[in-house]
Amino acid sequence: MTELPSPQDAMTSFIYGYPLVYDLDEVAGFVQGGGDLPISAPWNTFAYARDLLGPETKFVSPNNDTLYVMAMCDVRDNPVSLEVPATGSRYYVLQFVDAWTNNFAYVGRRATGTAAGRYLLTAADHAGPVPEGTTVIKAPTGVFSIVGRVQVDGPDDLAAVRALQDEFRLASHDPTIVPAGVPVADSAVDDELRWWETFRVQLAAFPPPAGDAEFLAVCSSLGLTDERTPYADPSPELRALLVEAERSGRETIDALMTGGADLVNGWREAAHLFDYNLDFFEVGTIDAPEWKIADRTTAYATRAVAARAGLWGNHGYEADYFITAMDADGDQLSGAHTYELRLETPPPVDAFWSLTMYDTPDFYLVDNPIDRYSIGDRTPGLVTADDGSITILLQAESPGADLEANWLPAPAGDFRPIMRLYEPGAPVLAGQYELPPIRRTS
Image (cartoon, rainbow, N blue to C red; front, side, top):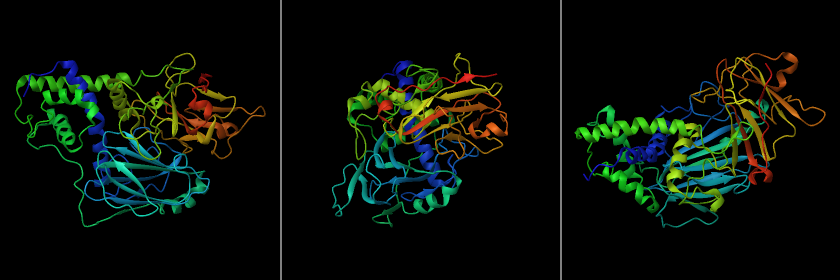
């Protein structure tokens, strides 16, 4: 092994690899049935969430607007065919996320329209025949996730959406080929260095793009590119460096979650939180400077934050996110108080909008007596004032039966809501739209 890098460089390597390890842990859990989501399926097979996700789902910042259609794919040795149905005017998106959490393709209302379609999902180096009328989508890492979301317009709409879910289909070209799947850490490595060993084997299986050479050089100095594990019997100096790098790396990622874009009325817009993909652009993505974080160090720190706070989130042009944890006075939002969010006009969207409630620090949905986890333009009975404004009440206790139509229940403790704009309108994409602050009322 070469000379050890500085503690700062070692920590940077942890941040660099964090999304890969985090993502593939979820991928493997999904396939094995032990992940954080309440659905699972074998490789190259869709799983369908038949109900909107609720507080029983211990997954970071899930939406409560759509039914999920999800699959974990491995096309390294076996292409997969994808069929999507016609959905009329209904919003849907299939988001393709590689092993490093880069969004590399989209199929859906914004990207490809709502007509029925056929796609061939392949490895990046695939050169085989393509059936007529089929669009090829090449996956940069071979293993990837399809995170599908289909719009639901209230409880009465569930049956129609469930039927539509079944028309999203995947089929391996050769079902006898067993996918290699996600590599596992060498069992000879103890728990203290298990994360680093996991990163080592996954880095070998899913090599980064050529533009990451500088990061890969530091990884190499830590033994991460060694063919055999250096972590079963490491030197005391290497062990100490890696343990500290993981500790400080996790602290740094959590600290970075409070930074990023400037606050506007207490909200932090996440329109560019997922702009860290710099190398692979397939169907439905926008390969343009305004949707890229050009500096790779910044891009990959952002990627780690996105994995920690909102794994599998969309680019801002597909769905924009506004996140806050403070009121108009800059104080932490808490169920000990009551608040209101007054929207003078509805947010400008081409699809729909919603405000979803999450606790902190886990960012899970919040249990409440009326089973309402989000509120938006599809909420039955939502009251719009005569002047066109909408006032949303955020509080732990009911505001009274006559006001519950516009109530988004909060937990007793601290909370963090997210406003989602699906297919954001032109004012949002141009950076001209501002959400008003959340004002404390008691």
